Every structure is written in C-alpha cells, then in structure tokens.
Image 1 (cartoon, helix red, strand yellow):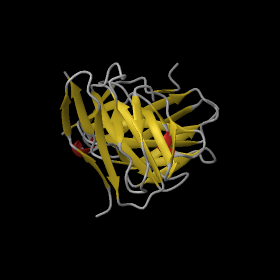
Image 2 (cartoon, chains in turn green, yellow):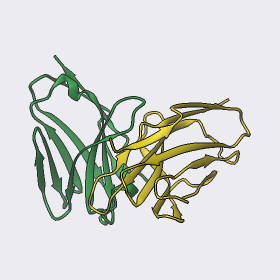
Image 3 (cartoon, one colour):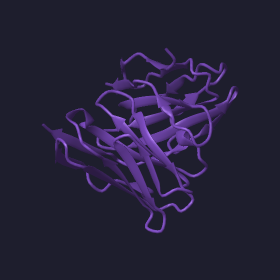
Length: 113
Length: 112
C-alpha cells in the first residue's frame, strides 16, 4: 500500500502561470514533508519543506500548503519558468528524519515558453 | 565545495557478481542513506546509518549490505542475492531532524 501518492504523473503549464503539484498521504504519523526537484540521471535537490505544526511555508516562488485533516499537501510555483521543468517528488517522514522519507512516484512538470 | 560524491556514475556487472557502490560526503553529516529508484517510481530506502559503526535496514534491504567505518563513507554492496539489481542508486546525507536530505548524483547499475 503506497503511503505517499502523487496522482498526476505529468503536468503542463504555460510560462508565467501557476503550477500546482499535489500529494496525498495515508500515514497520520508523518510529521515532516518535503518537495524535491529532480532531473534525469541526477540526484534530487531540495526545494521546500513543511512540518506538521504549520499549514503553509513560502520560499520565493515556491509555496507548500499542508492540509492535515485531508492528509494532502500541494506545491505552488508562481510564476512558472521553463527552467522549472523537471520531476517533482513529494516525501514524508514520521520522526522529522528527512533521510528516512517515504517518496511519491513523482510528477513531471513541463513549463512551455 | 561540500557535497556527496557517488562513484562511478555508470556501472556494468555480470549477473551473479557482487558490486560495491561508493558514497563519500564532506558535509560532516552524521546520518547517511541509500535509496534505489526504478523507472517511473519514487525512491525506496535500502539502508541508513545514523552514526559511525551503526546501520539499519530500510524498506528493501534484502540482497544488499553496507558498512559505516568512517563518518564520511557509506559504501553499498549489491550482492548476487538481489533479484533485480539493475536500477539507479542514490546516496544521501542529512544533518539532523527537520532538515532536508542532500543527495549525490547517483550511480546507474546495469546487470547483464
């Protein structure tokens, strides 16, 4: 049973518009959530995180929202840029240990110029 | 520059042979991790180590072994017991709780 799900394998948006990537989880013990960006044949790079005591965290163009009651989080990218095109992974951990995260299968974002 | 170095980037081995993947970090992180990624899937945790000379199994440890003799190094051995060893392997480290993990560039292992 997959504990972290990214139900949209791909997303295509126009440059300058908002990108919204979604993630659902089933384990109520998860208390730390992260988003990573990944290019093919490279390691993931950290984008933004949020702990369960918050419902929103912003960093520049990136905002993560957490809805604990719905067990749902989303990543908003505004405005989207062609360089944002990559695979985005949602990850969750149960004791704040990001290295022991459970990952979703990823969403491929394509930003068209 | 601080970071995580995985070598080699590409590795080919014959079926039945053991192979060791290297992971070195100069970030002074206590914790290190090994993940596996298969096409179209997320990362799955193989082994992790919170401190030197100690390591724990992750979700898919069967057919793998690790050692942690130095803080900087966490090599992964893919043994002949691993049924589907062909995959992209990622090493990571972190400095503590509620902080992100830093990943290496990965090693693509192909077993023929």
